[in-house]
Length: 308
Ligand SMILES: [Zn+2]
Image (cartoon, rainbow, N blue to C red):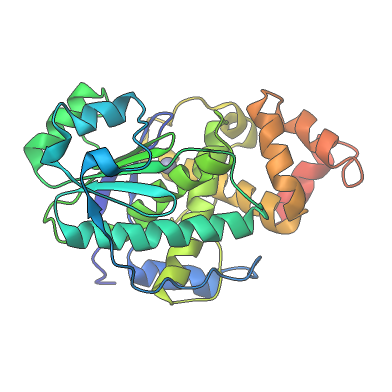
């Protein structure tokens, strides 16, 4: 297959990982291989006209530490615009426009899929779109992110390098990172790594496919592999595997487990389950607490998952 596969390093907020971005062809393959749509898709966004504002007029200026570093001493070196849930800091308008449309679309999609009435976060997400490589590398060094990263999400913030300044982000990677930021609005807590990555993988492909209008809600990671990362190792992981092939399996398996939890069990109980895990309850205990009517033991849960 002659499909061009961009390889882009990304860092999510717990640790570092190398992950391939997905091409449209890969996303379409996902659609063909996917499962039933769990929720009606969010409406595709109409073209919104971003209104640029000076930093002083942005309605939510609260930033986490990396955001403060990205903004720097003189906010006027950035252009700024905001949507209902996002503040976007950019250099090229085309980048900001593209990100703003996707961001609000993903927000709506995640909200629907989590069956949430509203999020639990009273701030806006901040997205920084870097244009110059040297400024990006300086930021990554100052914020102590991995120096090979080209996109980073940290809590509710997202930092991204758009090399050409022409809106040519690696789409799958942007979707994955954006999903982390959006999910944080609904669960603004530290959660296990498999859950954080699994949800970003699970939701990003689906939301991006819907955004592009290339499908109606299929699921599944676009990564290859058998989703056979050992479950106990997955559930207790606090850092990414060292080997690239294991990293792919880690993401793939995380996505499979999240997909099982969201689409094969009761979707209404997914967020309560996530909140238990955020409290530090282990999955085996949390499953029995949230699903006493479905599982008498964790082994029973694992058997069902393995058949999925
Ligand atoms: Zn991630």
